[in-house]
Length: 385
Length: 236
Image (tube, rainbow over all chains, first blue to last red):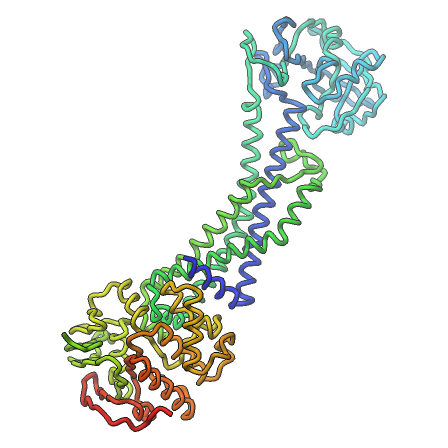
């Protein structure tokens, strides 16, 4: 095997430009593969961190009749709770409401959250620092769509527990920048105590967010979803994005492998006399098959080396500085940061190397098998077609 | 106990041609002894190269027995015939067949690598072989930089470096001018005398025949004459 590697290396280096073209294409596919997967992994990691920090916490209890995907369940999807039974849980009460910014009517989800909570990253403490009647915080997306700024007042209309409309001005005391659109778009956050007060729904909640130190215990009338369950959808979306991306680098890798296959076929045809000479000098046919296979798979080793030369600085730069995402990144359907920092794990790099080496070895072996059936006399004469 | 290093017994070789067959060798009987400097001569298509290929275990007879170094070629597996070639046979081809990406040294060294010789053993043997053919100063050159005569001398060194019992030379001077051809033949004759290596040529070149001490004439796949000749050329 050592001999095969030595010979293969000499043959490849001796082949000059042809070798380096193949190596170049393969190394490009290799670097792109790592980069794309690293980008998706970084996105995945970032999206999960952000979603946990802003929305999911360490699990959620939902009132049994509340379905977040069915707005009709919102009206009655709440229940009273006792503070003594909800240690480590942050209650959130959600009510439908309407605001009238600049005379426009805008339906919103009015969410009450304890101002002193620390489980979610929402700057809820701002709600307790204001003297306004109803202090509220909103996300940047909401601020943009309602054309609201910090300090603005806007009329809010809601229904109390009896279904009676009531209205008052809320004051925007903070606008937060958040990657998770689902806690921002069409949502107004106020103190839960204030929401209880204005709706008369004391100690009612629609959902609870579990804090890090929460120890699960069943609550009658509430359904629990663990963090893993909540993140499942996100994981599936990321997996889908990864799959669609793999088509791109799969094509690139396919082109590179096709080039190796083509080179191997041509090489075996052109080097018949050399093959015959190897056999005449005492190599078995399968040793020659091994030599040509190793030669083909050496492209992948050289591609790895070449890929490292320009790939490591490139990927390091990307991991350090991140990639600025486009302005309308919310359309992607999941949390996406303004800047994504790709994550290049050892598993990803080793996995990519193994994939490239194995696939290059297979496409090298396929044409090389022909050598095993070659008549050495015809090979020496260069007579095979 | 036979002294024959090569024994050909009623060997027939047929090749399929279209729907029929072409008989390249027809009931050949021949024996060669150690240290012979013999040639299989005859016109093109007479079966010289086919016979040489069978002796070299690159091909097998359709009928009959070809016994080389006590081994029946027809009964050898691919691995065994590769071992026979590697251990006991050296080949010299008409077009040298040097491996283009290797240096002269590496080309000669190749057979020894296959024999798993150590680097120091290889180096000594290669330099000795290059000295025999007068190319010790060209060890680092690539084959493309060599003249035809030099290329063939490298091929001789490659064939001789492992000290084989038999060297099979297929038209070794066909691509050489007269001066180089004589130089090559003198080198081979010298090696034959000094190392007692059996040389078997396939040729129709008069220059080569002048050096041979036995001529086996083939025509249409049959031995028409097998003569021991007085050596006309001597090693200078």
